[in-house]
Length: 194
Image (tube, rainbow, N blue to C red):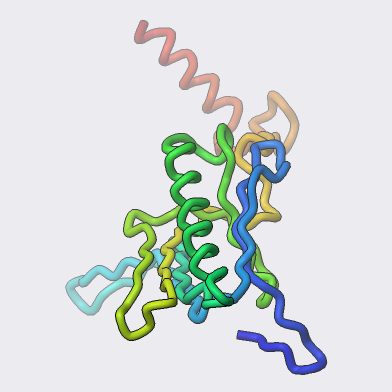
């Protein structure tokens, strides 16, 4: 991770909860950056054995996940308070927004200001963990597992529109990749079935 070296400054990480209109509902700023930030990107690649050798089908980038871990420090007792504030922030988010999509409820954002990126995230099924150890009794350690659901600079699905490519009525392609003639044929088949 980037560190303060006189030329560059160390910026802290943060969590934000944004409403569907983009306004900020709640925020948690880390006093101490996570000691570890791991990003994993899966590939949507399939390999199939064939008679002669094999074939590979690459469908691009798959699910991205981020795991952060660290401690909130001691800070004369304030670090422990901040660990419980972080846990309360995450508990409140999960309990208040249990179902739905980003379009109909607030979304969780992870900001890594040190490395200059922000993602809309969801807490992964493996969740998060807070622990204390007798060897470092005054520190609370955390591990938070997240699934990336999009960049913060991307429009949500409800803000996107459908586009018609070509002229209407002349077999133009739509976002659904279906010409008007094809969609008309499907509509007439549906009427015939009824």
